[in-house]
Amino acid sequence: MTTTKTAETEAPATKTVAEQVSELAEKAVILPLGASLVVRDDLNSVLRKLSKKYGTSAGLEKELTRYEKRGARARKGFEKQVRAQRTRIERGVTARRKDFEKRSSAATARASEVFSQHTV
Image 1 (cartoon, rainbow, N blue to C red):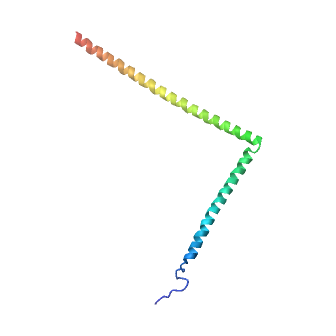
Image 2 (image 1 turned 90 degrees about the horizontal axis):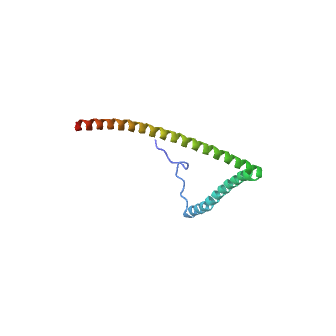
Image 3 (image 1 turned 180 degrees about the vertical axis):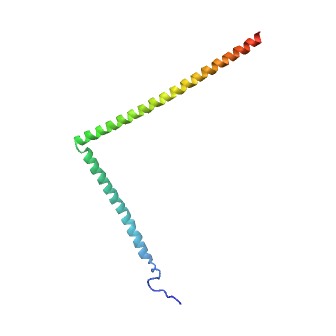
């Protein structure tokens, strides 16, 4: 059984050079235009939001208060971290100092013992 190709299964006809150039020229114009329209829409959206937030003195005051509270929270958190780190360091130093003093006392006692044996 042999099959024959119909018009539907054949590859589409290739485009002429003029059609290809025309499509490329169209894309070269349409792409930047579309991109600039998207940017314009995004900018308008941002400007509307900013105008809504800062357009009145009450809105500006509200945002400044919000920023102040957020800054105070951040400062308090940072200070808490610094205090905790300082406590950890102080405890480590104290433990090392005690260990050093203990070893130093033991070394001094041993040195005294050795020295006293040699002088006798």
